[in-house]
Image 1 (cartoon, one colour):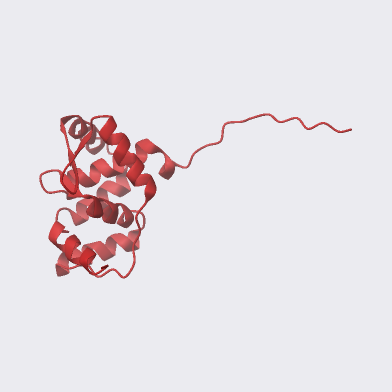
Image 2 (cartoon, helix red, strand yellow):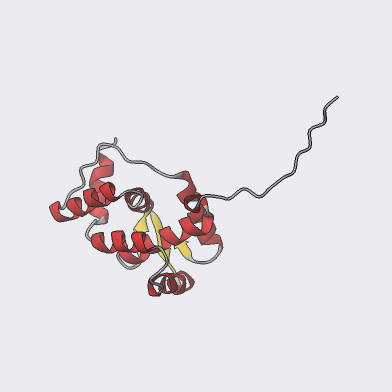
Length: 147
């Protein structure tokens, strides 16, 4: 009878699936795109969805220029929701009536990310192109069309 020997080996986790990466993305969105360092949950998910692909960033830049968002479909990432929960538990963000706000500890974390030119370069560049031009009003108008 043959025997099977199993040797467990560590499996690498894709960067995009690591909680600290998602937390960092969320904090960058709050810092760069949020008015008063806060965003609604819908806007957080929208901006997170956008930074995943250059084509989506271009769509958001165009939406910012036009003053309205025209997206037939976009997605909510459950991993972002988990990251937001973890960021809250770590004292990096606090909940607001409809989203989250960056607190002092989170601002220090973002300051470190922003000052390091080798970390999250693509995300920072994309979010800085959009900035605060996508307003909560634009996001709210778009989300009303879902009903």
